[in-house]
Image 1 (cartoon, rainbow, N blue to C red):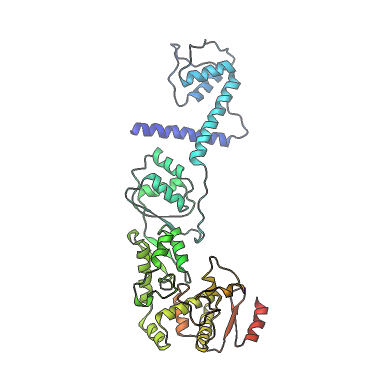
Image 2 (tube, helix red, strand yellow; image 1 turned 135 degrees about the vertical axis):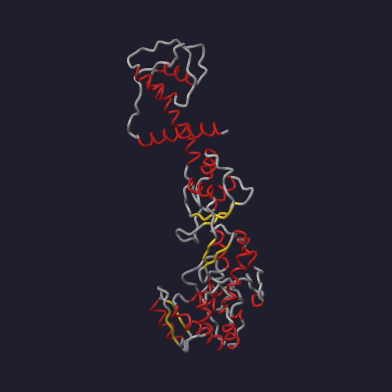
Length: 427
């Protein structure tokens, strides 16, 4: 078996060297013999076919330049070498050898293009450059299964190239199980070396403040940690704490309570339920007794607190705006004014819009805070601590209106006439 492996590797190296020569010598003619003559041993019998038969023929033919072909054709060529020699004799060295080389290039080039042609790796829209993509190699997975997963996640672009490398190097049985961290668009051989070395890792991922459940599912799926639809299905009724109990018209019970942070976990915990459990526990620990007491003093349930904080999170780009926006919302709630937050409309849309339209404000939904007074049914995102603290400790102002300019800075007013004038200025 080892002998076959060695021969296969030697043959493959010759093919690679040949292709490299063809690519590097574009525009140059390879050294060729000036006349053809079949190669024979002293006994007049054909040599055994060897991998370098063509190159030997070229060298010998060059050495015999000027001599006429003398050997009579046999009854019928049987070996590759004999067939090449007969073809060269019948066609003349230029036509025969060049035609043979052309055929060889086409055949080898076709195989190379099939095995090593570049594909198109899936685009990971929710990823930052250099962000890890995790691949879990489980017991029983073969080279084909691993290659399919690597291509699907955008780590490599050729399943066939990866499979071929495992076979030519005999690595199929040497790949170690475990969780591996890769980046998008890596070289197949580099990936394979990591898998054979067992260079496993601890899973680490970051969820930014203001991500919704859908965005979290997308990011985790792109990282190779979960199935996106399985995560969304589990998030619908995930409520390990009483304050997370699913309310009417709420799509995801987990929305708002998956704390945005950087997490580390082992592969055995990389399930939708395992990840949500870890994030919900983090949220529960960060919501201190003092914060809970302050919410109660403001007559806010924890569910209402996080719902309001999620609106602040989505409306505020800068920290200084958070307590002012929180104050505007609280004052509107106290006076019975609709919150009229564009962010609640954005939550209903398949993709975000820079500006909502008048038609958007007419959407029939309990989340449409232009049409419905009070808070929406539940959080629209997972807020960070700063937005939660802003609701618990709002600014002391009389503002009832605000609008953000194109740079994300908010401008405030106490009456609608002033608000309209500011909108004209900044939008």
